[in-house]
Length: 309
Image (cartoon, rainbow, N blue to C red):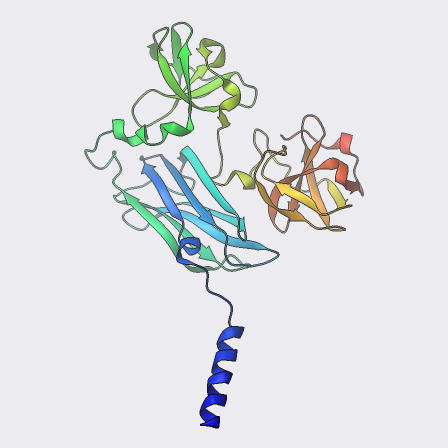
């Protein structure tokens, strides 16, 4: 009997020492919406970082594939462990190939600290309108809530791209439309007016609160990109944290906190905000923004950094 009890205690102790498995809600992301055309895709999902792959970050990958298994889009990203975040993009172009067959699949892949695939966390399939006779009107309908409503001040010409040539369609005055994105200079707004693609109009032709619009993304995760500017390909210097500092997705205290840069950590610096209050740094392979006043500049001056956000 004593041996049985002792064996049970050893087993219980061994089980207690195993790492706790994350809950199903934490492991499986929720893909709320996914739509695909023959040139772009749109997606919205919520997920939480749960595996500490390195330095408090969970590494993962987003992929889009067509019915033949051709990889259309791939993006490596990270989530801070325990952070619940929502990503949402509209009209992001495929970067690797164009689809040739339905269904189009968006999936979130768990990767290890070296970005090697471990397993599929979630995936969602859709039939693209360019391969199947489904309603185009339904394509963007569920994505519009993230936009901003506004009215045309006058007859307004539509453009395929900002500063591009008109496409030959004019919107009437005093009609309501939904804005999705804006350009960095604030001169152009991307509208959804029907069909599968967004179109651009001059901001001056719209009665719309432009400050509520997002910048057109180049990635799914905005925490991995610089809004409105091109990041220098190499760091311009380094800075050292004088305190433990919040690490954010944008140059604002209201931006999503994606981690913390610890006291005395030295990180590469790439640029600054227009008001010089924030600097863009790379911490453990992740781009983000930190308050400049909490850092010592080692080999570059704040005023010499380019404005990138």
